[in-house]
Every structure is written in structure tokens, then in C-alpha cells.
Image 1 (cartoon, rainbow, N blue to C red):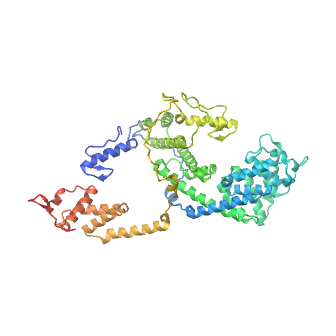
Image 2 (image 1 turned 90 degrees about the vertical axis):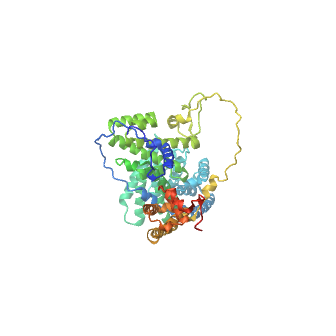
Image 3 (image 1 turned 120 degrees about the vertical axis):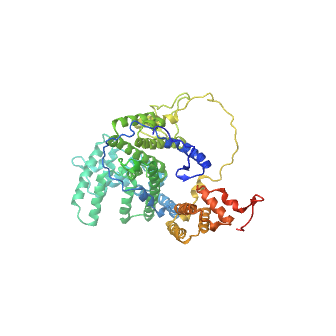
Length: 593
């Protein structure tokens, strides 16, 4: 434990595979050089010590890697994508055909609840801007609490300044709000969550609607209509719309919308298709993240820590559900998973001395210091954190980062107190400065710009005039094959079983076995049958004295020699002496094969 693993000059094997002496040293040196940072084992003061550890007795996750990898969906097929694009075009036309303000608002509300609004953002913005600009023409919502509440909620949701006074006409000076219409009460309750501090009318609206919705839940009977009213009231009281996970809300609302008599069949079909397509995308993302988790070894080696990978992914999906935010979901999921592991190290497993060293290692952000001083289980956690942060910093620097306030080249970027945006996104004044400060602090090593003697100089650069690659990203993404279907996978497994039977039982003669191995290798199939191939070659090598089957057969002797040496067996060159003319010291053809 006191030193790194070094390749031995007397090595006779590399990673468990037999090799010839000459190849061994070179291969071992290359392998050890490549993996040196990972395989370097340094002693620590905790080695060979038994430490009493606490345990929180967390239950293992039901979402194991193999189960997640088995998830499959047919909605990744191009047929569904083409149908979705066709439906989107028809829905855009339908949006243009709707001209009445209330119908337009109801359509926008349905699009949002069905999880489709992000496809039609320009159309939605245009409609809401027109409604807000023609706000004086309010006959369509006069004395209609449902319409007024819906307009108020959607406009405020999209950033338009709407006064709470629009609800004054629905109040009595003595008793407050007056309304016995469930649809109006429900809409007002949803709108009340968009109140601002100090808005007494909106606070009164929330109290009024909350009271009446609770009463409706209690007084509802067993009729289907009343049960549905009670269910809507219950969901409205649980959480405001903008706090809910969009896709979970969409799944519930699809069921509700399907039963409505005024449903739009285009919207319904697109919503179902969209939900299933996004689910397929999420499954593939989760498979990829689960592969990352398994590769780190955190779940397997740090059994004391919680595996909350799927829960973390659901959290990230609630923050950014749209398909274009796949990398955002990946970063959030991995961040939460790592935070959970580190939390368990601090709260449950680590000793005080270990935690102080781990804190110091993270503060230093020095991989060599961490590998030298941290105990084994902490090294794994630190390496996972270190690699992930570097990956994210690289991606952010290459793809996303652009500055909003840059100082002269002789200094680093510092947060400005007068920022009005952070990386291009509008923020409220208070939030902006805090967010900007955090971003600059986190990415300071990446965004630090240091002056050089070439500042402000135009430099003539050489060019090799390389031609652009014909393999552009869009073309590569368009590649598709029907052989990803499960039918072909099952057929392949069936054929592998039959080939194994042939190898193990049907082929018994040494030459036939060697020819079969040679064919498997040349056909690119040998990796499926490595165990069987090793057993055959092991038996042939150990039974080498029985060589009648290759006696005076140059083809058989050469094939055996090549395959045995290829797999690391020390076969002497003298096996070819029988095919040479001792007088002429040259080979003599004795076999046509």
C-alpha cells in the first residue's frame, strides 16, 4: 500500500491473460501507464484500522441497473415522430382558426395542462399579447368569474401586469365574493396563487375559494359528476398548477380531457403521442444515467449510502421536462445523487477526522492530494465528483457560457451590481445579483481571462485547408436501423444457444474445433463464445503429445500454432521442422491444403 503498482519486467501475464515474454512487458507498461491515476494505491493512516461505523439501515433501491436497462418503448420509432409533426401542423392551424378571446384562453389552458404548450410558444405569446393590448374591450368576460379568472391567471403567468381590481365586480362590500358556480370558483382559486404581496383582494379570493372547495368535497355524493367535482377540488387544494410536475399533471388531465364532450380530438391524440414519446426519451436518459452510476461503483461499493437515482431524475424532470433539456436533466440528476452520497458520508458513515480531510480535499480541488490522503471509500466519491464537475465545466464553457459583463483582459470577470440578466435570461433585480454572483463564483476558473503579450494584436495564422467532414451531426443522427427491434435480439440469443451446443457437443475432432474457432473469429462472433474457445484451446494444448491429427499436415500445424500463440500459449517453432528439407534448409510442400 505504500507505493504505486509498477509493471514488473518479469511479468508473464497482463490483466489475467497469458502473453509471450516480449509482448508482456510492452503491453503491461502501456496498460499501467494508461491506468496509473486510477490504480495508484497510496497508504493512509486509516489502513488496516477497524473503525466502528454507524448505519442508517437504508433499504436498497427497487430500481436496479438491470431493470432500468430492460425498459423499452416502441415510441422511439420514426413513424411516431412523423405523426407528431403532422399533428403539430394541424394544431397550429386550429389555433389560428380560434378567434374568440375566451376560446383562445381555454385552448391555451388545455395546451398547458396537456403538456403541449412548449410546441406553440410563439402562437401563445401572440394571443396573450393581443388580449392584453385590447383589455378595454372586456364585454366577453363581463360578469363571468370563470373567464376573468382564467384571463388573470394566464396573463400573470406570462408576465403581464394585470390589476387585482378586475375582481372587484364579483364582490359584495358586506359578504365578500359572491359565486356559486364550481367552474368559476375553481378558476378563481387557481388564479389566486398568482397574487403579489399586499394584494388583499387576491388573499380574500384564496380564502373564499379554499373554503368552498373543501365544502364541495364534503357534500359531494356518489354520482359520477359529483365525484369528478370532488376530485378536481381536492387536486386544486393540494398544489397550485405551476407547482405541479408538468408530465404527471398531463397524465391526469389527458384522462379528464378524454371524457369531456367538447374535447378536441387533434389535441387529445397529440397529447397521448407526446406523453408516450417523452416517456421513451426519459427511459433512454435514465438508462444512460444508470450506466454512469454503475460505472462509478458508488452504489456497489458505498452500500451505506442511499441510491436515489430515479427519484433524483424525477426531480430534474419536474424542473425541466422538455426534450431539448436532456443535458440539464442529466446534470441535475447526477448532482442530486452525488449530494445524497456526500450527505450520507457526513451524516452517517464518516469519522470526524475523515470528514475534515474530505472537506479539505474538496476545498483544495487537488486530485493528487485527495488520492494521497483520503480513505478508499472517500476516494471513490471524490473521483466521481471531480470527474463530473470537470465534465460539466467543459460542456458549459464550450456550449453555454457567454459573458454579460466583462472586465479588461488583465483581470477576471466579476459580478456587476447592475446586472439585468444572467447568461441571457431575464431575472428580477434581487434574484439577478445573487444568481450572477453564484455563476461567476462557480465558473471563475473557467471564465478567468488573463492578459498576454498578444492582446489586441492581429496574428496571421496558418491554415492546412482541411476539407470539412462529410459526416455532419444531422446526417449521423438520421442513421437508423430496424435491427434494434427486440425480435432480432431474441433470434440472436436463440442462435447463440444453438452455436454453443455445436461447439460443446457436436465438434470433437481437434482440427474441426480449430477451424470452428478460426471461423468464429473471422466472422466477428468469437467474443460471444470466449469461455468455450478457452476450454478447447486449453485441452488441445495440454494434449499436445497426441499429434497424429496434425502429423504431416502443414495446414493443421500452422492453424494450431497461430491460434495457441494468439491466445498466449508458448508453442515452440520446432513444430515446423518436419516440413523442412534438412539438406536444402527450406520448406517442402507436403500438403495442398
